[in-house]
Amino acid sequence: MRDDVTNANPTLDLMARRRSAPPLTMSGPGPDGAELETLLTLAARTPDHGKLAPWRFIVFEGDARTAAGEKIAAAFRAKEPSATADQLDFERRRLSRAPLVIAVVSRAGAHPKIPEWEQLMSAGAAATNLLLAANALGYAGSWLTEWYAYDDRALKALGVEANERIVGFIHIGTPTTVPEDRPRPPLGSIVTRYAG
Image 1: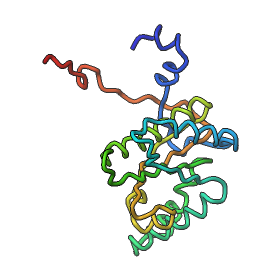
Image 2: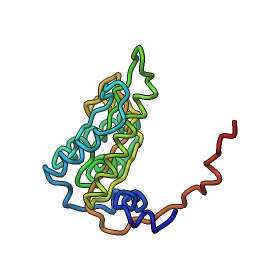
Image 3: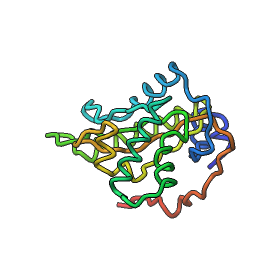
């Protein structure tokens, strides 16, 4: 990647610098009300074949993170009856690791013209937009899907309908460290040119 190209364009520079940050490396403050509205508005500006808006967002902030954590812990206890107090406490704090957590929820379903796969990809694009917008505002972000994203009991308790799926929980907060980059695949291993 050429630095002279990315450095000359703030959007490309942002994309080149985007890193995931573990939620435990985030602190407050998180986005304020106006910033949250900006994040959600930009997340919704995603490719959306048919203008279906096949996704929605669930915002966990303030005390709601703790209340949701109690429900996650209860679902874990039901799944793992021999769970220790330490394990339950860990589960209870799942959504309290960052000041703000936004669940991106896919509402993809049967449609006469638009495959469910395209709808699901639109939800993934919304999650990516959310991460990029958070980074553009100076926040750290991390896209996580942990066990409770696939557990029917936990999903119901968090307000996810039976016909919906979690695309990811986007954790957002103030970075306390510079996130490390990870090795990226060399283009030669992931790019081919169609020769006809």
